[in-house]
Length: 188
Image (cartoon, rainbow, N blue to C red; front, top):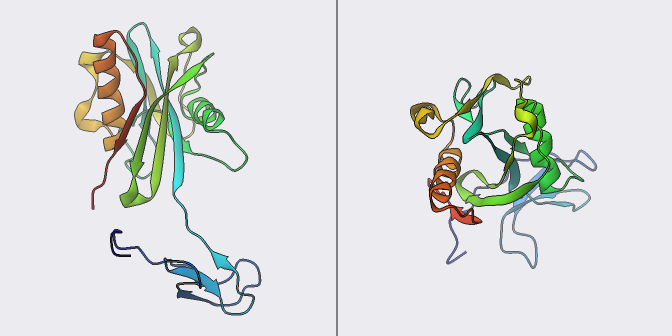
């Protein structure tokens, strides 16, 4: 691991296939510590989680949700969440947007792909127009509102990646051209 950042060791204790204890070791032919079953030899890989969401606009305003769950309950965010198995990134963004903000759109385009290696996440944020201006708070949101640029509650934004997404959107809007952005936020 010469040129790699120090690996966080797996925390799995038991095999999900046969329930035997696992050991943490570097399997033959690998270069990282893995949870390896002491009985059946199954190797368990821990991979980053993909978060997908939408920045939806309506009449020069963006749709934000006030979180009703931890982490960062009571703070504002764009509707987003973890991708489910057998789901496209776009479908996940649309599902999370509907679940958290009761909002729909006809079409979305990739806006930001951001690596967060310190928490092993990858954010895929999309941009689109809010359909018919309709929205409502879902179970994970205390409140959902449209905000103009001067109204954004910057001191109450839940996550750095969400703040970055919103700022990039307003920068692109001023230029009159929306691009696809790539970034990394590493707080280690």
